[in-house]
Length: 115
Length: 115
Figure 1 (cartoon, one colour):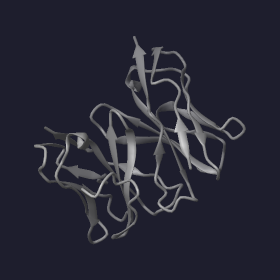
Figure 2 (cartoon, chains in turn yellow, blue):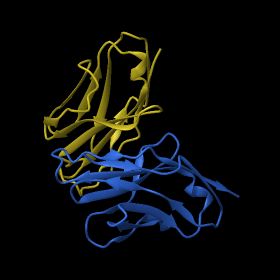
Figure 3 (cartoon, helix red, strand yellow):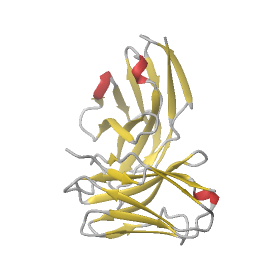
C-alpha cells in the first residue's frame, strides 16, 4: 500500500517568507509526528498529533512554527518568517496508534533551504 | 528523560566482514528501542525493534540486535556486510511514560562498506 508522502520534496525560499510543508500519512494511522533533521542538531522531534489534536508541541523551536491536522489525515507544518537556521529536512511519520511500541513509518522528507 | 548514544559517527568495514554498530540508552522506565536505516535522500526505514519480548531481535536484511539491560545497550550486528548496507543508521528510544511516544534518536552512524 501507499506509504507516507510529503510535498514538496524540495523547497527553496528567501529569508522572511512563509512556507507550508504537507504530510499525507498512511491511511488509517491515527498518530502523526513531525521531526526535523539538520547537520548540527541531528533528528529532533517537533510535534505529535493524535487525531486532529496535538497533545505534544514541545519540540517546536519557536512561535514561528505551527502545525495542524485536518480530518485525522493530512497535516501541514507552517513556518512563518523563515530564518536561515530553519534550513533542514523535515520528516513526517505516522503510526497506527499512539503507543511506545508502535512502528513509526517515515516519509521521504521535505528539504527546506532558506537563502 | 530518555537519551541515546551511538558510539562512532562513521564505521568502515570490508564487504563480507562483521558489522557492529553500537547504541547505549538511558531511561528511567522500561524502554522500547528501534534501529532505523536511512539511504541517501530517503526517509527512515525500520530495521528492527525491541518491545520487551525476546531480547534478541531479528530484523530485515540480515540485521539483528540484542537488548542488554545490565549494559543499557542495544547494539546492531550483521554477520557479513554487503555493499548495499552502506547507509546511515539511527538508534532510537521511546517509552510508555512519554505521553507522545515520540522517538528520541541518537546522532547516527554512517556505515561505509569497502569492496
